[in-house]
Amino acid sequence: MSLHLAEVTSANLEAAMAIRVRPDQEYAVKPVAHSLAEAYVRPAGVAWPRLILDGERPVGFLMAFLDIDWRADGGSLRRSGLWRLNIDAGEQGNGYGRFAVESVAAELRRRGCGELWVTWHPGADGPEEFYRRLGFRTTDETSEGETVGVLDLAHR
Image 1 (tube, helix red, strand yellow):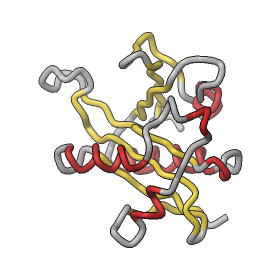
Image 2 (cartoon, helix red, strand yellow; image 1 turned 180 degrees about the vertical axis):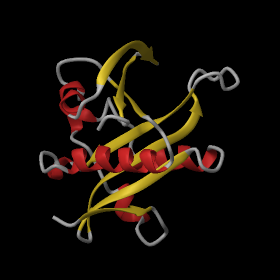
Image 3 (tube, helix red, strand yellow; image 1 turned 180 degrees about the horizontal axis):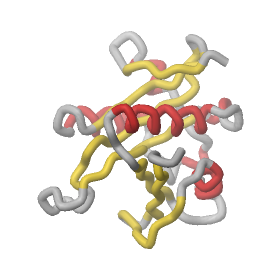
Image 4 (spheres, helix red, strand yellow; image 1 turned 90 degrees about the vertical axis):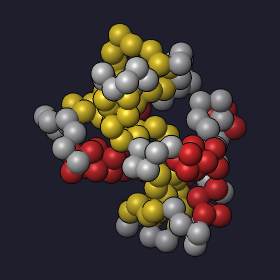
């Protein structure tokens, strides 16, 4: 595997938007096109969308959030983390999700962050075990009905 991230550009936009999770996962993650639209309407520097490539082959998409006002109350709680993770249905189980989380963690460390935040839909068919295996711990918070998890970057 020669895994790497690529900025989403006009040259790879169609490939990014072709990424589709399994049908049973569609309730839990927005399509790539929705994520790119959200990135476009946010203030510059808040969203960090990236195509996940294995060699030249697109296998997934991620979008991080950077230094957001978590409570939307004027900035009393700032956080950065993983906003979206879409691994193509035919590519799941090959380590691409782990690579995506590790890539976001590396970028956040580079930016001086000590924690990586994520939310997920709770339930037996959700991604909680995936995130726990990577070292995330749940908090007592929820965000829009989703479980909130955090990974300590300072001790990893």
